Amino acid sequence: GIPEDLVYLALIESGCNPFAVSRAGAVGIWQFMKGTARRYGLKVNYWIDERKDFIKSTYAAARYLKRLYEIFGDWREAVASYNLGEGKLLKILKARNCVDYWQLMRSNRLPLETTAYLPQWMAVTLIAKNPKKYGFKPIVEKPLNFEEIEVNGGIDLKVFALAGNIDYKLLLKLNAELRRKITPP
Image (cartoon, rainbow, N blue to C red):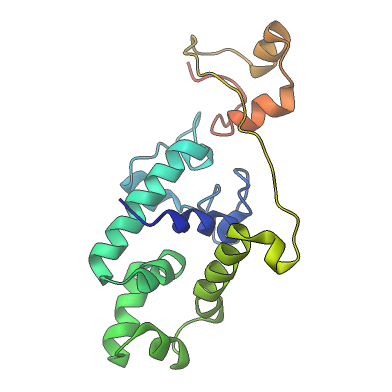
């Protein structure tokens, strides 16, 4: 229920790296803080950090962005608040009484990172949709062929890699949410 182009925010947030951690402690491709992650249904505990799960965190990010749009009624402001936080953006909007988002950007009230965030997303989106036009080679990646299986807890991923003749590093990437490289007991 959100614009498909919002998927490109993950490139700005983390470069689509599930292991990315910001200076502020945000984690995963969508750079969720622990509290926000939990608010949008992601588990973060000793064994699991679903902020690193590509699929679950993407659904959580979509729910969060949809909520931000409900609050602001404008996708530009929703995107900016994803970066800054809805409380901070609401406070700035109230103080400045701005007519539109571009006026808010020119007001010098937003942090530089947030001011650059929307234009970065717009640029990344344009480039990703037509890389040749902007001097980039198209990325042609075939979807990973994988299957999900439920297993008993307490099993080291190295065991799966050996038993299934699976590349261990790839298995770690596909199971980035497992904090201990072991299935939870």
